[in-house]
Length: 552
Image 1 (tube, rainbow, N blue to C red):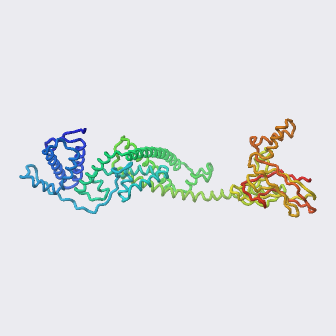
Image 2: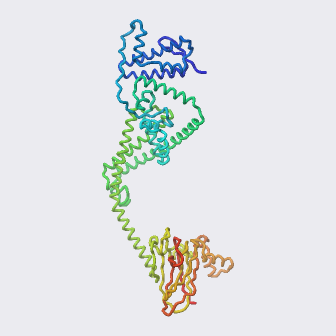
Image 3: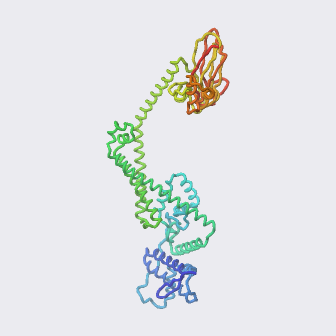
């Protein structure tokens, strides 16, 4: 069932379906709009309307009760060019017209080489028709542009959405057949207008009748993507609003506050102090104003677009679109140019402060290294290897096996495993047989407690790999406490050893090297190393302390 209405054309009433009336009205409106810009165009449009009435009268005489959309399409296809209309009118008019002068014959404008114009292709759109129109303008399949847009969308953190919205606002849609022809780069003449109008009508009918499952899925996906686009766009606009507020406050503070005189308060290497001292006031003013203008226009265009989509406000005029786009582009270009000058000025101004800080770090490092070496040498020890030890730190405190966080111990660390660490003590002892004990820990194979006598005989014992939890010191203390309930001083000491690191231990173990023979030369060198001649080092750190040499 279709809704039927009655129209009056030149004093005659014609029943016509509603969809047929909409098509006919749109066609006549497009033709009148096209010819209105030419000399005698109004008379030509009246002739076209008269020709339509004549053809509808033929349908009436042939017994058609109501004009359908198919009849209207046939009428449009039968209407000839303006020259043919003039000939038809001359042949069918037996006597001169009684009203007004005869309109001049239609002379079509000379066709120049058509030039494509950029429009949004709303007939083949997925969202706003931006990519479809761009593909038509560039001669590229819109599918590839859409795939590229999806990749950019997920890699741009929302900025691609903002740019798409700006293009959606600034690029006009191709609504009329004339605009669609300009978008395709085809000549705009009567025949092409008529053909384009009919093609658009057929595509509209086909789309409305093609309710396939795939088209429904695409519509659902498009709706979901459109919702995501709105959400991201709103999030970007909220971010722009907060950034604009911060820019207004920060710009006023930057330009009005005497930052150049606040070096003693904030430090002479404070960024705003350096910026005030190194950048010219004009550069700062240009940067601040361009930033505020770019953010304000982005916020305005985005808000206008969203409100337009929900039908709250009228579309932006073409002049306002062009003006806003040009001002926004100029503001962005000026912003990047001034920002590069600001960065260059700050980089030049901050360089002396960076060099000063680097020199201070170097001096502190040298002082710390000297302190580390002094600590080692003051105890009578000697550094053999300290290659690739992080920060040249040879000792440490904080995780001593006794729980005393102020006691130092030998320690070396490098996360990439390239460290070479070895410290030794050169001792003069009486000839005989000795046992060397030490408390040590490590997180990898290749760490040893060792001793070398005057004959270069080497004695060594591997440090158990426990990491920084457990260890024999903690385990023995805990086991002894479970079987011993006395309250002696030894008991209290064991209790202290057992509760370190929240009752988990720090990984320390007692390492014993037995049977060390010292000859008549009384020479003995002992220490800790990760440069074992038998086992490759695969850890990242080691610790050792409490070395004790006992004669057997």
